[in-house]
Length: 213
Ligand SMILES: Cc1cc2nc3c(=O)[nH]c(=O)nc-3n(C[C@H](O)[C@H](O)[C@H](O)COP(=O)(O)O)c2cc1C
Image (cartoon, rainbow, N blue to C red):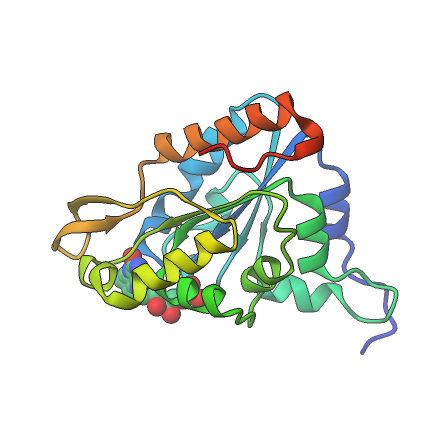
């Protein structure tokens, strides 16, 4: 532990949030993470919406965080922020901050982890600490052979039992050359679903934004 004051930027960034509806986008190591800059820019076009991103390390292989219009948090931020007892814990700050958690894309690895409660990085710690009365939306994205493995439907069903909402993957020619189901839903579809939750929250704020679909 160091005596120096904590890295203040992540906390200050959350405090500076200007939106009335706060969307946390979780990004995992699917090739569909390429679309994250586009997804974030389209979410920011929704009125009153503020966005932050939490990413896995492998996801960063597929996009450049510098090309995302908002703050991108990753594992190093979690550990840099906490130096002593009074310091904030980033995964708890993020779950407090967000009205809605959108995991897009959700890869097979993180699907398996969150379905069984594993929390070994910043993103999965936010999931594990998530207030299940708030919406958590997930967009699976994986190779079609992975998608059709019997473990996938079991794990997806498990997430739905927690109350999380699936934005189903679609069939198309995948980046690996295979044809079939497993591609992440279109960005426009994902933004439409988020918008429905925002409308629902505006209509009945005390009930939260759950159960739109
Ligand atoms: C080029 C490439 C593309 C990949 N695309 C996917 C994918 O679309 N879906 C998936 O589930 N895994 C995919 N993977 C495998 C994941 O990146 C790998 O399981 C990784 O450990 C996921 O880590 P994370 O869940 O912590 O982000 C891909 C790997 C590579 C090298």
